[in-house]
Image (cartoon, rainbow, N blue to C red; front, side, top):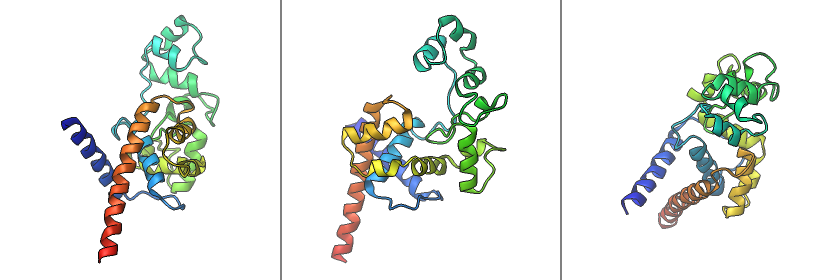
Length: 212
């Protein structure tokens, strides 16, 4: 009971933070389903809205498991283990607009959905009217929520959210964000918790309107 109560309080605190933010919202209708998917994915990706910069402090074994496309041997992974700059430049360099030395590290994941790559930082800068290319830490420190909402917008994730909150719906959203289904069970749990809390609030407000 205590764990269930604390988890629910955490969801409510996150909802309160979200409602009180000055986030530049997407233009589409923000339904309960969209809010639940959005907040749950942000919650999972940022470890409970606590991490806004990508953690690249991988061991050699973790590098082989996480980035098998880029690390083919244990020896290669050992040369880069626990060195976030080397890892980011190898994994992200030469793509996503990263075309100069250390761009991979400079434009590593930031924000609640981990905005990654110089080209995405350039596009988001135009959207938010601030220079996140020159000052990339703005995405982590000032625009963690905005960058996540922008990503949902430009990647067409809102329309996927509209399908519902079944396991397959959540998996579809997860694949766009994650490129796979890592942490799917936790994402499902969070999405359903946010949905239930948001639905409860909406129903309460609707009853107030009917009875006023």
